[in-house]
Length: 273
View 1 (tube, rainbow, N blue to C red):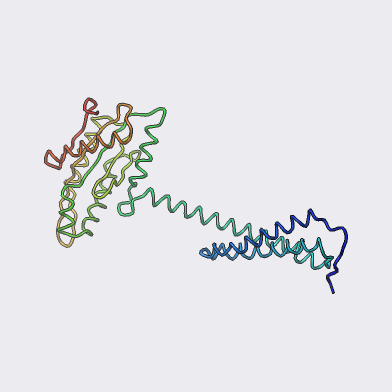
View 2: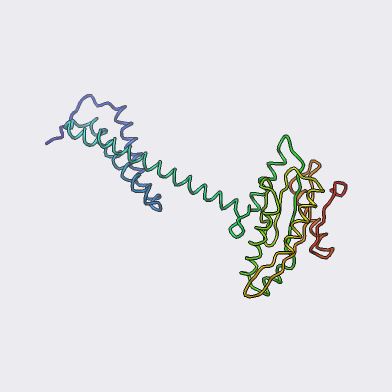
């Protein structure tokens, strides 16, 4: 027999915490099943916690039984070392994967899949940050809508509509500065945040966009799709909320549509309510 029971000087304090830690490690082992969806992390954590469990179980039994020195070295010291290495490596691998996934999700939330422009959510985030800035500068918002886009989809197909959206998105980027933000607002609508702008600059940029869109001829299935846009523009001059600014831009866009489409309508300060 290599295990010799003893009946004296059992350290109840060490025994209690040894049992507690061993039970915790066993619980961790059981719950490792929840990480099976990630096999690369699972195998390191599972093996690591298993070695730690064996090391702690041996250490706890050592409080009750006298064990051979070699057994203690193998299961306690070496097992504990291997366990810690595997667990630390598994956790570091898990963290690296989570960081990569977070970066990917962040990009998805900030970038429209079709046009590669900013998303509506990201635009609102930037606008809100700009409005709460202590040194806010005057800026303008352009809300752009493709005229008769529904008819384009119905006549040529949604695939043709997607091409129009992508081509126009590229044209919008060419018409603004790198410091400006171009986003897909939804469907056939785009929105632009012009930094350090005023009514004159907003109107000038909007007219440039309208003209370039009018010259944009999209080829699809040996057909030529002509594109025009209506644009509503508003410039920040007062303490307005983001929702009020967007609402003003939507009113301007509606006016441009009512005036016959392929129009730019800029709302001046006196008109903002």
